[in-house]
Image 1 (cartoon, rainbow, N blue to C red):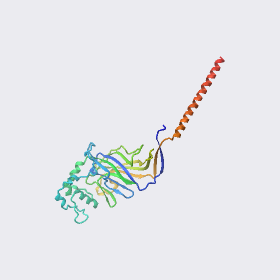
Image 2: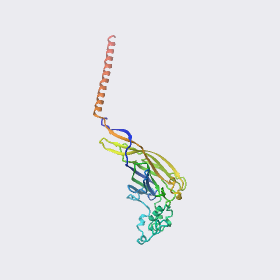
Image 3: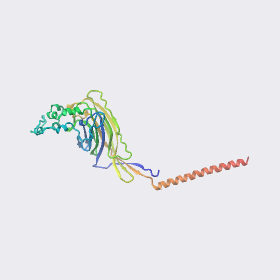
Image 4: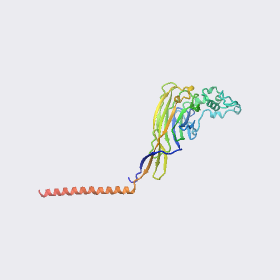
Length: 340
């Protein structure tokens, strides 16, 4: 008992400024290919990170949930392996951008360059089968080949320590007139966003930490043709400091969460910029101004000695009471025997 470590919580105002928030993610999408999936983050300061690749890994999964590639990829986009096989004379030629040129003489020699030109122009990339570069790279065939696959996304994000959100959604992401757009037009109009959250945490792990989203499993109920889903998790992040007996501190976070689910009609690619019609899994987080500080402590030696003295004194007191009761009982019994 004396050697037992106690953890004492304290509350204070969080006065930290200019820090970054680390978000650890480990999520599986059993029926959404990695090639269709993008991860974006944005916050109240105006910073936007589109199609995150640094520190995040995507691992392709087959229909049974088994990894397809032994080595996870930081970027798993369609058409790129075949793109490298484009003939040298085709690369040297000036390919058409199909009306999406930003300046005279702009060339689009690959499917990705055409898609980028469309993205800058704010156009939906709906018909890759009509784009010569995409046909030569086999993009349409690649899309069909990966349908039915799943994706395992894991790693971490670094964001500003202000309110914001990060989300997993199908389609290529870009900004169009200050709107956040997911262009999934060439992938279809229905997406199964069933998912398994192995782990979501904010900051480092610490003893006794409980992450309420760990092990959450959501199965999309697609009741009609072309139906997609929108999952929203509203997270309240509480800054936390854990101090152990050695004096070292762990600056981390705890969080609570509420969730909302909504079925969406088929994606209208003509209105792709409307966020409320975009299917995906969204994590919207806000930070509490209150910080929790956990401190490990052990009882002092004086407290231990006081407790021992109290126990010894209690034992002697009880022993004296018992002895007195026995003594007086025997005296009374002996007196009655003498009187007959």
